[in-house]
Every structure is written in structure tokens, then in C-alpha cells.
Length: 199
Image 1 (tube, helix red, strand yellow):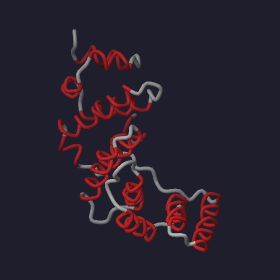
Image 2 (tube, helix red, strand yellow):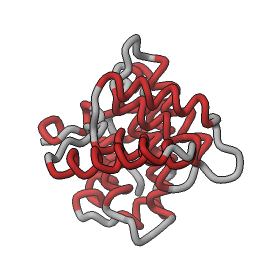
Image 3 (cartoon, helix red, strand yellow):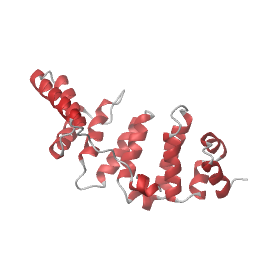
Image 4 (cartoon, one colour):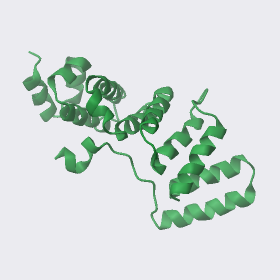
């Protein structure tokens, strides 16, 4: 019998494939709280890289959480940014950009980490969601906020694409220096999924 207790039991045993086979996404959102559903979707995605179906199920579950728990979801812009990153991992590039853009639209002063994610949307296969000019604007805004290894790496690639050899060499040196000093862009994790909130 499918109910909250049976689902919690399967989760406690880490039988991820059984969850995917036995429970519809809407049922999971019905049986579990917002926090429980977010934790489950996170585990489904990150504990199952060897099985393509389970991470895809996890992403669909995140989209369902966004719909079922819209007020909780929309209270943290990092939810959309994080979901966009997961979409990129499973090659859903239009959805990736849409999520990044929704996160961006919620903020009056977006951080460099989100601007860099948006800047990278011009490299999707087929027809990218943004063009190179838009990408460069996001990149330069991120760079004005914070110089990190990831930003320098993107500037080096831009200089190479523009055949600016001296600029490419400059950014190459910056990449080496920033990597040695461990200056990286902050990873975006939703508040509800931060390690201290998951305890």
C-alpha cells in the first residue's frame, strides 16, 4: 500500500529505483513536506549518477516541488539557480536558462555566481538560449563584482575567441594565480539543502 509511511521506509533504506518505480511524482509531493521532498530530490539526483532515469526523475520532482510548494520555493532564489544547474547536467538547456533567468529576475543585485551561470548559457549545443553579446555582458558584470578562477577562465576563452592574444595570455596567468590561491566562485545551494538545514 502506497502512503507516507511506506515511502519514508523506502527512503530510509535508500532504495532509489524502487521509489521511481512505485511512486508518481505528484504522490511524493502529497505524502512529504516541502523540506522532505527537497531532500529526497537532492538524494535521488546525487546518489544515482550511474542510472540516467533516476536523475531525470529527480529533476522532474524538483519541477513538481516548484509547482506544489510555490510559496516556499519562491522564497529562495537559489532554488531556481540550483535547478538550472541540474538541468544542464542532464542536457536540458532551455530549462536550464529559464531557471537561471527566473532566479535572476527575483534579485535586484544578482551575485557573480549567478551572472556566470547565465554567461555560460551561450555555449549550449544547437541554438543557445542567449547570444555571445549577452553572454559577455553577464560575464563582465560578474567580473566587476568578484574576480574568481571561473570568471578568469571565461575571460580567457572570450579573449581566445576574439583573437586577442595578449589578453588571452594575461587571463591565462590570472587563471594560474587564482587557482593557486584557491579563489573560486561560490557554489549555489538552496538554503533548505544547506548541510546545517538538512540535519
